[in-house]
Image (cartoon, rainbow, N blue to C red; front, side, top):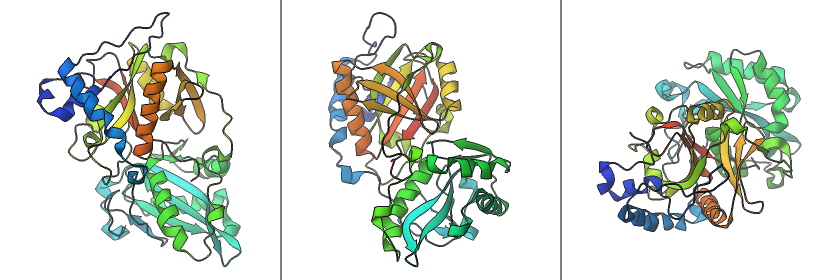
Length: 382
C-alpha cells in the first residue's frame, strides 16, 4: 500500500479520500521561512475530506473506549478479543498463536483493603495484543523484587510463547521491577507503550475492584506514570539531525486500523500499532501528525529505539510535544494561531477515542512510511 499522503485510483470510495486530510492546516518549515505543505489532493477530494472529518469529533466522550469485564482469579487467562463482552477463557483454551513475545507488566497496590486492613497488591501481566492476561495476588509482606521475579519466571515457564521484551510504565515501582527483571532473560523496557496493559487496568478499575469487599475509591489514582501529582517537566528540543522539515495534522478513519482495514504490520515500517477496541465507532477519525523529512529512516529508527509513546499539543504553551520512554519529552514545534487551532482539533479527536492517535514519519508525500505508530495516551491515574 502506498502510504498515506498519496491518493491513488481507489479515490472513488469516499473514505479513502480522507487519507490525508490537510483541510486548512499549514505545514511548519524548520528553515527560516514557512511555506504551506503542498496539497496533493484535488479540490473535490479535499472538500469531501473536510466535510467528513469535521464531523469526526461529534463522538461524545461517553463513546470512548469501552471494555470487557476482567476475571478476578489468579490464573493465566486470555480474552477472546479486546472488545469482546464474553468472559475470558482459561489457559488451556488460549490460542498461543495470537500471543506476542512483547509483554507488559504492572505491580502495584489496588484500591481495595484486604480484611479492612492491608492493601491489595497485584501483578498484572499481558502481551502487546492483549490476548494473554495473567493476574496474581501478592501478599503485602512479599512486595519485593525477589517475589516479583519468582512470579514472572513461573509464568514464563508455564507459557508456550516466551517474552523477548517486558515493558512497564509505573515510575513509582521502577526500581523494584527493574531489579526483578534484571535477572531474567528478557529486555526490560521502562515505557508508556503499555497500551494493552493500560486498557486492562482501566477495565479492572471500572468493573472489578468496585465490586470487591474493601473497595476504597479514594485510594485510586496515585502512583501512575512518574508517580507524581504535578507534572513540572520541561520538554527539550529534538536534536537538529532528527527534526522534521515539515509536519501536518491529518486524520485517518478508524476503520483502517480495524480487522480488514488497510493499515497493518506489513506497511508501518519500524513502527507499532496499539490494540484498537472494536466497539469504537468505525466511522470516526483517528487524528495524527505526519512528519516529512529527508532523514525519515534515521528519525523513525530513533523513535523506535526511544519507545515513542505519543504526541501532546500544549495549547497554553503553544507547543507540540513528543512523549518517549517513561517520562521524557521533546519539543517538536512552536504553534502559531492557525496551527494552535488545528492542534485543538487534534486533542479533541484524541479525547473522543480514549487517547488514540498516530505518528507517521516519511521522506515525502509519495513515500511509504519509514515508521508509523498508532498510539494511545495512557491516563496518569492508573
